[in-house]
Length: 132
Image (tube, rainbow, N blue to C red; front, top):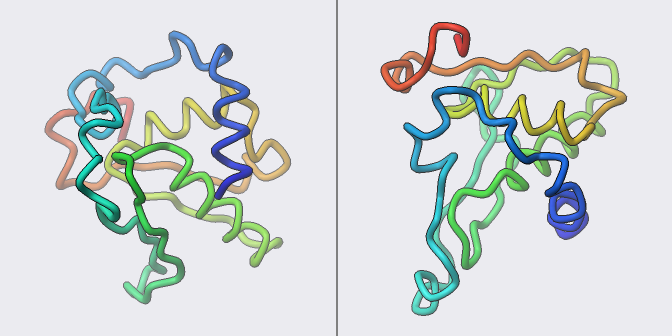
């Protein structure tokens, strides 16, 4: 995950102004909490991926941060490396935001055509129709 953190930090300028219209509606997409928020917390949660049968495939410990984009990007990078010949559907509460960042920053560029992003019905009330 360290390389994904470095890559996202290095491409920060390219990411300016790419947020989908619904991004401001999401706490996950607009997490403004800082380091002092996490001072008394070592582990803040888990970021997970599952297959369509709900079998866990990968878990990442959220450590002293909120929900950052490098967590799903790291999971996708590892998943795509393990399954080089598969198309992958990505269902994420801010899938539109994640897709915009991956595209704008030119991340996973060799496999972007194998990815399809979507947003679950549970989170649809804060999204634009184009996010679905």
